[in-house]
Image (cartoon, rainbow over the protein chains, first blue to last red):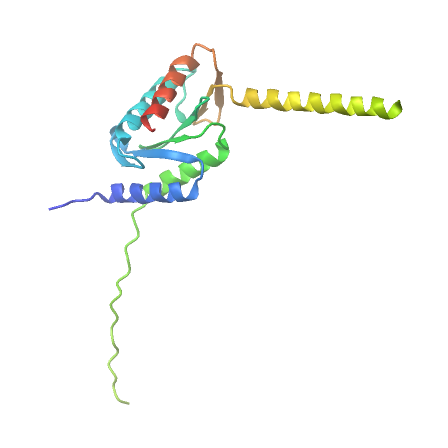
Length: 135
Length: 67
């Protein structure tokens, strides 16, 4: 029997919306706690997911005074990599070079928020007829 | 004579503006890593800094993986 996790469906829908909304995001992957891939915009999202967690781990040791890194951007000449963490869930995305940083972060945070929501159930299309009482 | 001097001054001004524009564009394209912490602070690691190098390498790998 096929079994689909509600969280995975929510993440997939959120990523689909992200790709429709953002013209700057090229690819993205949503990770659940523990680094498991919940949804990705391309076939091999696991590699980007692994590198995103490595980036967060490496970033955590940069500042001597500590503090948790909850978002980062790696800007290169070929493009940028964004990683955003919200609670247990993480999203990683790639863009072309010189993206509108604030806008990308906003879209990624919105996507993470949506990924945490349960997908809306479709309304039933059946209708009930009222009995005519004849009065 | 005055018109010629005015023309030359205009040309020099345009050249300076173009140079500034190109320099600004090149500066924007410089590689860097920006880290945002949960306390609201931000650290920017410029290209060439020891802390940025491993993060830039991971970023390049991530861009290749997502291609």
